[in-house]
Image 1 (cartoon, rainbow, N blue to C red):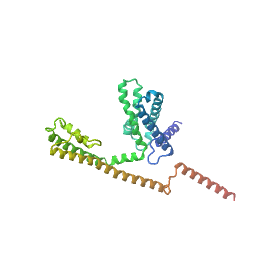
Image 2 (cartoon, rainbow, N blue to C red):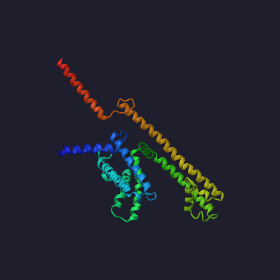
Image 3 (cartoon, rainbow, N blue to C red):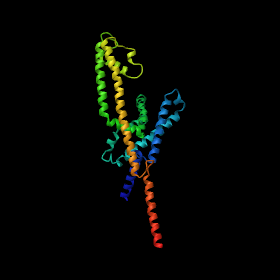
Image 4 (spheres, rainbow, N blue to C red):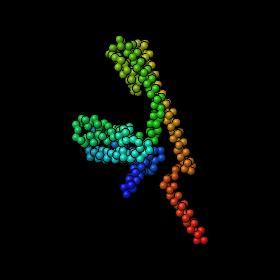
Length: 302
């Protein structure tokens, strides 16, 4: 009996895991769960926005508190189910619970609910406000329920060396140009370029979108102007090269994903319009077996 109970629990664990971590071929239940969690996350984001506007919270505290409590309860159940069912996966069978909890998405899930429990412990209000900032991390949970975001994560993981080299080279060039700007402009504009740090800040501000620092503090020496031009070119490189790397990688992964989907459809004897559900296939096999038995009985009667 104990063995039967253990098998039942393991089957339940496996079923929960396929719903929580559906992979490339999610079931209807997994899709429904994804839509439900995404809806809760969006409601949370909207609630967080309206909480910060005027006296919305003071006028409707019960509504906002109810949204918070229900959301935390849902996210907590989701977190605990993931933590309970992860061992059903072949990929994580050798992992311990603590190792699984250190996965980036599990850390995000924990930080998404942590502020509520810290606030309920009666901590200092200033500390609670700091931890409440982590509530915005709930939007990162959307990454688990989006195929495109998952593909992008795979692209970044596979192209991390190319991205690292590109960003590192750009940062080195920016640092060298900032040092040149400092030594070229320090004597002429000591207040604006008081240190290498201020020159680096100026370079970063010049590279970012919006009104650049170049509009407010301009190099006046020839060397400073040349270095400033180099920094602006580096800004283009920092944006263009990683964008090209990620774009090419994303396209490759998308093609592979579509080919895998098409192969699965062909393996199941489908034309590509859809997939047979495993339960439907089992039922068809049973019906076929029954028809064979009926046919045999008819032959015996004749």
